[in-house]
Length: 135
Image (cartoon, rainbow, N blue to C red; front, side, top):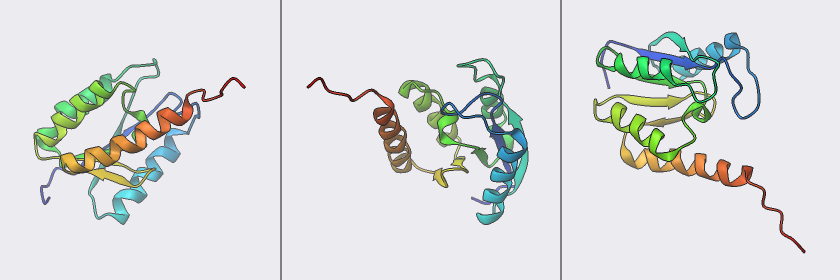
């Protein structure tokens, strides 16, 4: 893709997978990812701290007509509900844009790449569940 809008970063002000990461570090990870992948990086939008809030992500998605795509700090910033993520993928891919996750070094440019992205998220959700068995 060779547009000129660049890629908007998306960082968190709340924990990701129960871990807090300073916003400055999140931006450094995104900037380094963009440099390694030849992507024009635009300043990041910072999500509000309230759990389950995606107001800033929605604002970035509304900005997509003027962007090449979005670089998430982490794929684990997306909604935990599969349907919420699917809506985001649709909004991005239907406009011919890209979604990147800097920390995990993965990207989504096509629906087949969404399947790989989802596999990673689902394995993590499965691993996080209590799998202890009564003996």
